Image 1 (cartoon, one colour):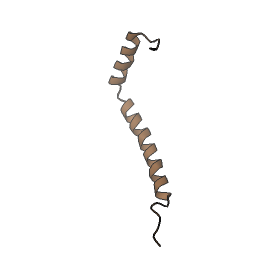
Image 2 (cartoon, one colour):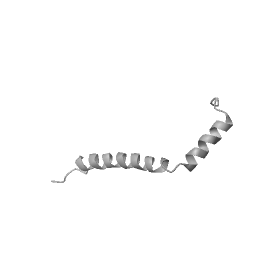
Image 3 (cartoon, helix red, strand yellow):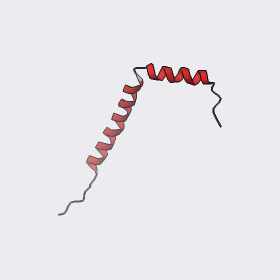
Length: 52
């Protein structure tokens, strides 16, 4: 079932999102934080196991 938003509201939201300059950097910053946490976790992991 479709949401209760009118097509005009959806259009306005889509146009606002396309025109906004802060949305892409915000997602990039969030992705950077997640990737940094994964890199720190991978650095501390004992993988691959040592052969000695």
